[in-house]
Amino acid sequence: MNIKSLLLGSAAALIAVSGARAADVVVAEPEPVEYVRVCDAYGEGYFYIPGTETCMRISGYVRGDIKGGDDVYARRRGDIDRDTYAWRTRATLRFHTASETELGTLRTFVELRSQWDDGHDTNGGQLRFAFIELGGIRVGLDESIFSHWTGYYGNVINDDILSPMAYTRTNVISYTFNAGNGFSAILGVEQGNDDIDDNNAHDGLGHSYGYGNKYYRDANGEIVGKPHELSGKIDDYTPNVVGGLKFVQGWGGVSVVGAYDAYYEEWAAKARLDLNVTDQWSVWVMGGYKSADDTYMEDDTYRTRRYTNSAGALGFKNGVYRQVNSIYGDWGGDWAVWGGTTFKFNKKTSFNAQVAYDDTDTFAASVNVKYELVPGLVITPELTYISWDNDYSIRNAANTEKLVDSMKGQDAFQGMLRIQRSF
Image (cartoon, rainbow, N blue to C red; front, top):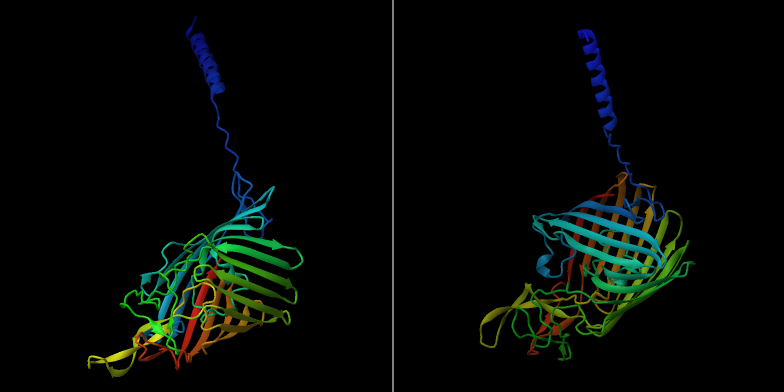
């Protein structure tokens, strides 16, 4: 065997071995990529959660509110005047899910909110809403049916000045019937909440929180006030009961809602009429009535004339201010009325106005212009005015002095600018 034959044989052997090894190499195939699929069965923005038949939508907004002038939401005399402007920034994130089952559409809704007010955190990661819906049944944390069934007043920002119970959230179980022809009805039971006034509060019957044993009498000398422990929740197994009816057509709609507060054993109701005058112009009016009497507490931010007490010492007499301690009928006096209008100049610009008046002679009015600068970004300047002229008075525990509403004869004017990016 010569050298040439040996080299050729070795090369052939190497090629054969290499080919055999090459045949043994496993090449990994790329996994198929599952792209997010659009789900258009429940409206815009929904997509299928990968690997499921559940659709999800993520929405929310970032908002900035800058306010100047007086505080139109002031409850006590000393809170009307602002020393400077007020600045609030809020971020809200919402998660919606929906899927079809043999019992109907299964939905969930969760809203988280964080808020920064004038240098401090006022709503850090707060759970605002969290409920489950199956068919017409809803269970979880939601706003009271009494608040949302007839609508949230008008299209102004400061729409609830006469109803300052800003936190009407409650655990709720409700059922909504929809006839499919514009008629719907709702019935639910609610737990209530604890977000009521607690500034130096006492209940009028000697149980005091922050001021010692004090109570008040009305003009006839009768003790007034409802015993409570700074709570708006039920305290036994009897829930709050809320129900409503609604009829909506192209011309507008009519809605009514009523509520029984099991804690205070009182009731309240609202009725609303909406009219679409033209495609551009709409108007609405709403009235409310409640059976509960108002409760007044001492306002230590306002002191009237000097007086001489029983010991001969000089001092001051404080005024009083109305408390809000129920999420059903939180306006002053027995009744309240609201009315408003919206005129759409075009797709980007609308004018909105609202007025309100209640049984305590409190009047409020707001006007604004909403302008969509670019899609999703709305700028809203708004002006709001309120006046207080409550003639109600109560007497002290000794029935020797008449205490008047510290807000009587006062008014407030506020201007604000809202910038909101919704997605």
